[in-house]
Each structure stands twice: as C-alpha cells, then as structure tokens.
Image (cartoon, rainbow, N blue to C red):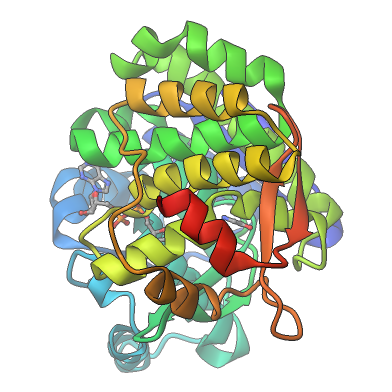
Length: 358
Ligand code: NAD
Ligand code: GLY
C-alpha cells in the first residue's frame, strides 16, 4: 500500500492507495478520528457493486451506517439532488457528530463534499473514489460542488475531506470509456508538471490499458502527489492551482455544448488538452511536436482528441463563464513544452479559436 499526504496544517489528510484494501477502511477512519455514525452517499450502480463491502468494513469498526442513493449521472449533480440529501439527513436527525462517506466517482464525491461543507455549516467527510478520474483528481484537493444549468460546478465550496481511500481493485468493473476518461487526467499531470512521468506513461501504455494493479498504483500515487503539491501551495486557487485546469477551459465548453453526460468529463479534457497544446504551439510556448506527442498518447488510450464542430461564438459564450475569467478577460493554461505549464491571458480568443477549429 502507498500513502500520500495532503499537507494543509490542521486540515492535512492521508490518501491510502492500494489494491483490494477495503477492509483497511476501519483502521484508516479510526486513525483520523472519524465519527461513528456515517451516511454513505452513492448511486445504484456503485452501491450494487461495492455498497455491502464498504458497509461491512465500517460495521467491523462498530460504526452505524446509513445509505443514501442518488440517481447515477452528471445530470443529477444539481441543487435539487442536494436538497433531497439534506432532507434525508434531517429525517435521520444527523448532527455535527456524524460524518458522510462518498462512495462513487466524481459526481458523488463533488456532491457529497458540498453536502458535508454546508450541512449544519460543515460536518466531516471522507472519499472512497471508485473511478480512475476520482482517484487521481476529484477526490483530492477539496473542490466540492454542483452544476448550474448555465455552467459546470458554478455552485460550490473548497472543503477538504478527512481521508481518501483509493482502491485500484475497484477499477476492474469500470466501463472502458470511464477508465479512459481517468487516464486523460493522469496524462494532464505529466504535461503540466512532470516530463519523466509523461515518458513513463508512454512506456507503460500497455500495462495501464490492461489495468495492471502495479502500474495503476504507481500512476495514482504520482498523480495524487502532484495534485497534493499544487494544492498545498495554493489551496484556494489564487494562482498556481489553475494549472490543474489544463485543457479544462476548452473541455468544459465541449462538455457544456454537447450537453452534460454526452461527452464524459475526461473525454472533454482530452480534447481540451490537445486544443491547449495546439494553442501553446501557436502562441510560442510549446511546439507542434509537443502537441502531436500529447495527442498520440491520448489516442493510444482510446481518447478523443478532435474538437466537435460547434460555432466559435458558441465556444466563446460558454468560455466566458470560466472561473479563470478576470475583469472580462479569458485566461488559458498553456503548456511550456512537456512538464510545465502556466496561466496566460488570451488576448484574441476568437482568432485563436478560429485557428484551433479550422
Ligand atoms: P461519474 O461520477 O459520473 O462516474 C462515471 C460512471 O461510472 C457512473 O455511471 C458511475 O456510476 C460509474 N462507476 C463509478 N465507479 C464505478 C466502478 N468502480 N465500476 C463500475 N462503474 C462505476 O464520473 P467521474 O468521471 O468519476 O467524475 C466526473 C465528475 O467529477 C464531473 O462532475 C466533474 O466535474 C467532477 N470533477 C471534479 C473535480 C474536483 O476537483 N472536484 C476534478 C475533476 C472532475
Ligand atoms: N481539478 C482541478 C482542481 O482540483 O483544482
């Protein structure tokens, strides 16, 4: 088993990464002093696969467990679903001595985290991420929230979990598209922060495609370590943390224009990263060769890389709501070669998009 720590002073927390180590949940929750009464939030898909095993692990630690199932899908990551969660917690007479456990992918994790941040002005929560994307990205770093019809994740809070339990054994049941979507976020870490890791991904492509537990544990550990380093320096995204949004400005536009749930988040990020890499090359921060290399790796992971054919004006309208916009100006994360990235103001985004979509 591997461990990464997110070092945020008294809000620091461990991430345990292993394979088939669900029984260790008891020990991990005891170690962080997690409440004995726990509400698991999951969906019918993940609940059917792992609900019993997680409940058994918690009950072995004499914990009292309740389960809330919300419908499966990005389209349910809404204030309406959240209200139903609050209703249930109130029915159960949950108070500040209780905690929540997110059992699922990023949708469950983001919504559970926001429920925990806001119920009674904050109760503790832990993440048991069950998708690759959630293990390497959404369960770590404390971004929680729900979507608004006019933009993704527009309602939310920074609120850190007490513990994250990454079991790569749970990824065996993940559908291939969802698995590939997680690989996109892993590639992101190599591009923005670690050229050696990017080369390792190129070399270990086959092992990762075969879901080798050893390769996965390593990839999840390095991804979590990179994310932890960035979050430790800039928890509330005043600067550096924006680099974790590499490919996301274009990606969110693709996701929103296609309609939530049609193009997966990781697929949209894959397309967005190649658009960002091509933009970097056009603006002189990277080269066309870097963009081709990034595109090749993503394609070898069965990910889409070509932007769908929406009008430039439609892309711009969605990108105007990006959280990196300042004083009306769009800012983009651009890679500097492979292994580094920075935030740049986009002076003529319409012209740039014209070139990227040509
Ligand atoms: P998801 O949560 O919708 O899960 C994808 C699908 O896989 C669902 O149908 C789910 O039921 C199923 N599933 C989950 N685990 C499974 C398993 N082990 N076996 C079989 N099926 C399983 O999608 P996701 O890609 O995990 O997360 C996407 C969400 O994460 C988006 O809402 C995105 O905005 C958010 N996100 C948040 C952050 C953050 O920092 N908070 C970062 C990246 C993405
Ligand atoms: N997924 C981007 C972030 O956590 O900042």
